Image 1 (cartoon, helix red, strand yellow):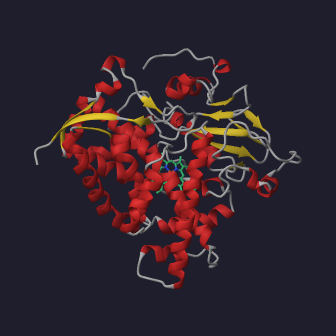
Image 2 (tube, rainbow, N blue to C red; image 1 turned 180 degrees about the horizontal axis):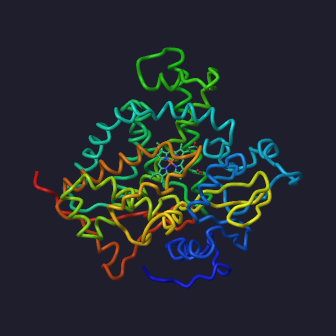
Image 3 (tube, protein in one colour; image 1 turned 30 degrees about the vertical axis):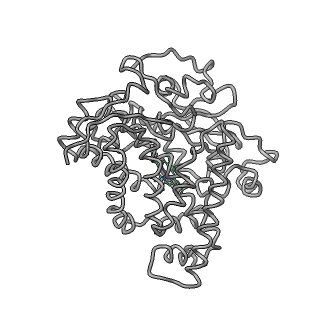
Length: 429
Ligand code: HEM
């Protein structure tokens, strides 16, 4: 890895284009010197350390998720008085971005919605979804394998990830094209681009309408299907949620599960195409694929970071944090913490403890879609390897090995490719 000299005081993690494109030198510097660091420009407390991140994840009573999808600057709509701003935050919830999404909820409201959410992603549903994932991989590959080249982000991953969630939720096949039009044909939200976020939100509004209609239909006329299970799900105290409350949770699965999984698949495919030895090893032993995916998540987490807001005075990594302090957990950095992972900068597709990474978060908000994301990536990679004999980076688009040019998401929250052009030889049928 190239070593870039970093002086924390002169690097703005949130706007520096080099750090946005390649954050590892920044992560490594912080881990070695300041696993909890109050950066000077915005006063955000940046957490790279693994144990320190766990302390934050496991104290939702101290660290609110209300600003989870916001940015480094939070202009609180109230004066911080007293030692606990929990109630003030709830009173002003509507002020915060994406405040209707579960990932921004705090206890006790979070627990009620999480129980509905977990009813949608049961082990039984995930098992039933597997055959669909395998068949859908083949449907996309039937189109692109004969061509010998493709932009995997747009020609495979975007559509595949939408249909994976659609089938999990029991959306009828005849509605799949509508969802592909709505979700797979537009860019996902990238930070610093408010217009895209607004577009994304309008797609969500349309999804809300779609699911509210399905829930109302199924409540009026229950059937033996997954949507009826969704429509009749109750909160833990037995009350029936409003249709819009369930519709938001279902729709959030698309919002949270599409771009993230697209990026995981993009990053893994890039690695396979770049590293002929690794590709050969995976071809010879498909049982290595799940471990390879965990190691990719450890070293290149698709979500770089998540925000939290301090509710009560606390201490973290030797720093005193006052109510109203913004904290950022860098999921990608924690996977490189040498106190947990030996030789953390080295990619080891068989690392025994790779799965301890924090790419899916931890605690009450831990990613409920992780088993689906893993299954999507495992089935896709296995089928792509089975149906090709050699996968390489398309140098016409990305340059030669010594001068690659990637089309990367340049954001402090997400990592990955906006396009990934690959070439391959179709395997004999
Ligand atoms: C590689 C793919 C994925 C990654 C890296 C990822 C990462 C994460 C992370 C880090 C969190 C926790 C955020 C926090 O604590 O602030 C989270 C939460 C969440 N994820 Fe994922 N995710 C992925 C795929 C998915 C999929 C496929 C789905 C849906 C099927 C999904 C649905 C959600 C939801 C609904 C939450 C919020 C849960 C809550 O607040 O209780 N994710 N994800």
